[in-house]
Image (tube, rainbow, N blue to C red; front, side, top):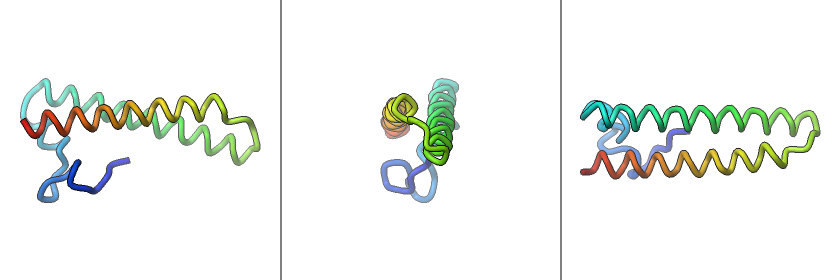
Length: 84
């Protein structure tokens, strides 16, 4: 789910990598981001499978939207912390 834009990378290096090197607190925040991204991917896989099987995806899709919101929140936090 990593995005390759100026908000998440500087000079070819991810803000998360910069932050993780900086401090234990930074590493903890990056680990939270990683978990949020993994959760979103898992839900995305469930939605995809449900669509293939022509099952109702309403609940999983709502969960996916919430997971993506968390990923975006965590990415913003990583970016802000790395820029400090």
